[in-house]
Image (cartoon, rainbow, N blue to C red; front, side, top):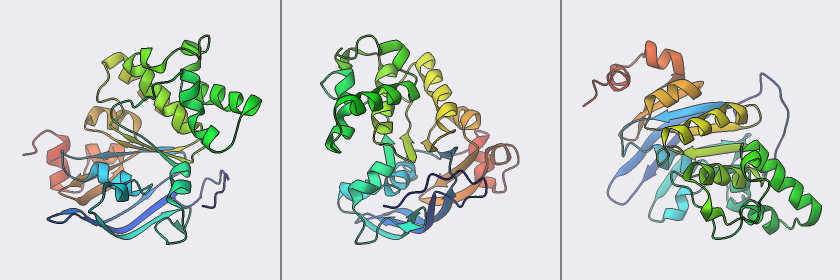
Amino acid sequence: MSDDGGRDVEAPPIISVRELTVRARDRVILERVTLDIPDRDVTGIIGPSGCGKTTLIRTMNRMAERSGGLAISGSVRYRGQEIYAPEVNPVLVRQKIGMVFQRPVVFPMSIFDNVAFGPRLNGLDGDELEAIVLRSLERAGLLGEVGSDLDRPALELSGGQQQRLCIARALAVEPRVLLLDEPTASLDPIAAQRVEALLFELRREYAVVLVTHNLQQAARVATRTAFLYQGRLIEYDETKRLFETPREKLTENYVTGRFG
């Protein structure tokens, strides 16, 4: 996977999805979805349960194909390169496009070893590895809370700390895109607020794609929001416009609570 760390304000989207269709044996999960993900920003994805939100972001780093039984067609490009091309290594795709799941998945090892896991697989050790771990914890807003005891078992952390640890672990392999699948759904309001505050920091360096059932959360943190319904992209616009003056009646009904 090629990469380019340039900061051109007029840069093309970091991920481009075109006519993406995902089928299971007995149903269509996504149907001809087309949208662009901007760099260094937060893009929200909303919609009712079962509309295809999680499948959509899982196609953006080739996690969907790991589920088995899915037929994926269309195009997903990262910085102009087709990630489903036969010559592209999906492991390299997932290094550039990281993912954090709804429930924190921490490894039964120390805080340090959790964050160091990916860099070690890439052959890093010593001072360089330590620097990456500390930097990743700092970026995830966790270093001040755990930095004095990195040998502590990660499973002893609170739920909110574990989620930020998972974010730090994703950042440790230096991705350019971070996919978040309802990262605050299992957290208490204070922990959720901390994760939201973290997103405002991360958007300065990364493209963030946030799946959320919480419409208020999307309104608070996302610059652009996509509304999915029954596998189709109904509307994709600036968040303020989508919530206040949506073009589609279906969108209006959903964001105003008249959906059903």
